[in-house]
Length: 296
Image (tube, rainbow, N blue to C red):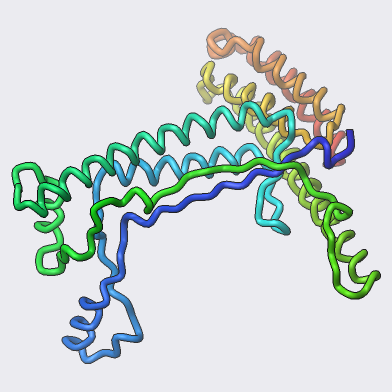
């Protein structure tokens, strides 16, 4: 398959309005008290504050990191390039986090709505959310800031699509040469993004195995199974991210997986000869990677 067929595009989309709010009235009050122009600044307050909100925001950050760690950025379209063979693993991770996000938001919204109804009926015993909010914001609390529901404040979704080619676009610029140029630029932009991403991936692989070799070679360094497990995960992920289908890179990743999987850190820690043997084995992979990359 060609490069376009080996890759997919993924986008994340979030809406998260429930935390901070510009308070125009408070801005004007502050401006008057300080002799300032209210057009020159804004006063922002946390009108909703709750651990569930913090948790939802943390999940969004985790989802972004999952995508960043498994893809290459394509700045030309503002999205991310995903190797087709990495699709299933990535989507499974995103689905798990997306479900966790919506479960968290559902708990927050139910708490908010129940407390809103109770507070509006002056049932303060069952309105802990708003009782705490009013206490926290003191004189800056405004009941009119709070709608009966905040469900529409949140959204969390991702989309996956095929990689468009320049010929897929219908461009009417009134100039055939310009239209052809735009389409070629799109294809070139995609190839450049893949090239940059693969170069970064190769660099990360070399850095990881070089660091592993240095750690094994140093008798003062403690070695743990989790160190080798992390290297195996890195190599497996690199294989899935190999959107170019580079067979030499696949072979090196297989060498890394074999070496790291068969390493016995408990033995290496106490046996200098075993440590030296393992260091030599990893050094050969480092040298192979450098030759492959043309690194002196």
